[in-house]
Length: 580
Image (cartoon, rainbow, N blue to C red; front, side, top):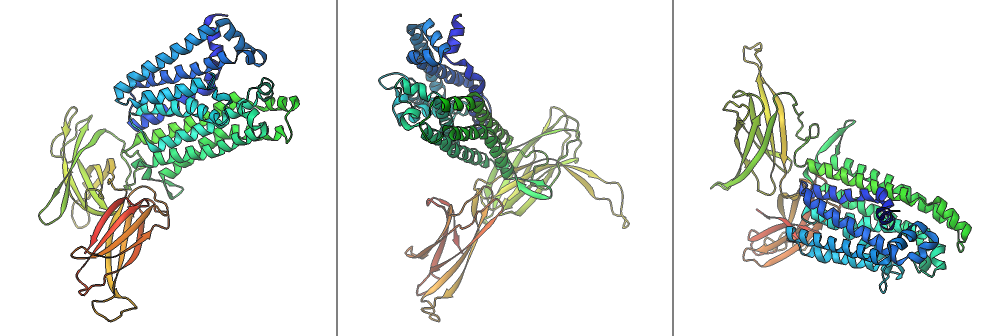
């Protein structure tokens, strides 16, 4: 048996088919976050991942030679043949190489915390098997060491290397995966229950008992999968394209619901294989102390490579699905645009991009947006045959619509740079629809002798979402007298303030939004403050109407100011408006 065959056995390369694809999940999500792939950086990150993974297996084989001689003979034979000195050199060399690559990545990304992050992983990964730490038999340190070194740190590290930045929802995804796969790893270790017990090795199964450990493994998987699903769903929902609707059997269904459903199916199908298997192991284990007969039944039912492969591929398919949708943003794919128009796919083909949006304030207080675009074609296009049309929308209503007609002849290699000027509400709360339209005059005349109407076909369309996902669309008030002082002009006056909040995009759950209304004198003295919280789910296109009454007691009922604030559940102000 040659060196590489022995290395393959001590580094447990047989796990690659089942666990290797796991690397695709952080890669796919990292590409989605960054919008592209820095190939060399990704290869460096994957190298760190692989070197440390194999180093962990080698150090485990080196420290468990005596145990493996009884139950994993092929590993023990390879470890003995290579010798502890060679194994130690392999571990040190791979660890040093991984650290050197990490330092280079930290320098490239200007993120030196990566070095400390990887060193924490190395500490727990090597300390898992090596005395005096030996976290493998240290009770609560077992889940901490294994979940951090084998799952959470490597995949989060690889994501950051590819993405170049962090995302809180992705942290949640990988925390869920770490919890889930630690539960699966616990199951695998339970297969050696009798062997570990006979050799005095206090692994979780021995320390906590076989049945209790299997219950914990099942519980961790049941908790971890929804955690992962929530993180993937929220990561994808942030993308503007997810707010579009798709017509299915006559029903307009938000795209995010379809994607979340598909992600849930992928995760459940993948993890159901191992969850069902662990359930069977619990049933086989019985209520008493497991003997050789029980353990033989458990080993026959346990199929860790299949369980691991199914679970990994469930997560990978879910990650690739989310990433594919994210990478489509912000362009709207054919058939999915919510402008209500079909997309023309004939010749010639056009390349269109919105280059810039600039805002100008007029002396009369109005705000205008100038949208500049670049249009090119792979064929000759005559003047007047196409136009760029833009609409500004506030709270779902069209504020303005203007067009710019092609005034030059387009040919391959040339471009047209139209601009359209539109009235808008505010910079943060106005959405724009921009379309390239083909115009063809009909030659037929009607009975009245007038020329025929123009046929229009939408060639391209894009929605440019406002930066504020939710905002105050209107606020008004009505003065009423309180019951305590009805009829007393200037005293005990109440303002009934009605506020409409529009969800331009995103989903807001009960309690996540709050309206705060403050009344004060014109000199700034606070009179009253009242709040109203969101009580129902608010989705894209929905309007939340809140009614708040505040005291405006003053000698002069006209000498007060009403300020309305839209706040997050935690108190951060999202939008504000003074009621006139």
